[in-house]
Length: 198
Image (cartoon, rainbow, N blue to C red; front, side):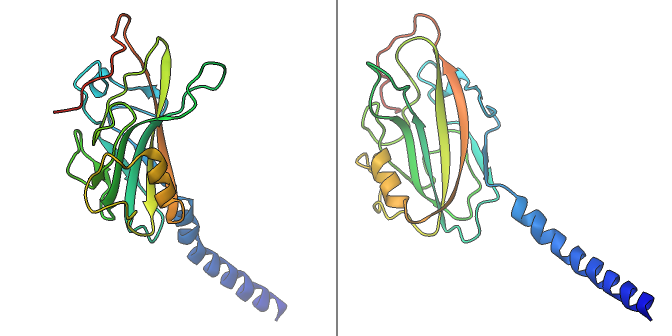
């Protein structure tokens, strides 16, 4: 009798365990941001900087948190700390109100979501990296999954800065994913800020 009871309990345990596997696997999926043109910590092609065509790169994200109703994107560079270093981060690209069913932004994206300003020329839209001085610089793309619209305005606006975006989404962010890239400007490149895209 004991053998029958033990067998039944073992069979029940195995059966229940098999039903929990999918949920464990689903929970292990990570919210990620990638690009077909550059890998994590890879070198950003010049085409996407002020030394090239000044295009926005294609970005793709997957496995956003459940309940995501909107997305926002920020591209920024945090300068190194120390004497003489800039005190505030630079930002190059802000997009909000990206629809919940979106899974990517195409190259030269300008029609998905609403565009904010940048710290390079204070105009609306993307300002390609054009950092002064030699050496490798790190740039970070961050996609934010939001529980509702960021509510930063009905139209694109140059007044939407990095600080305004982050403050506006601080209480509605369900999760975020990042893609870090590097860029080294060619020797002799001009330090003059690039003009806004036409």
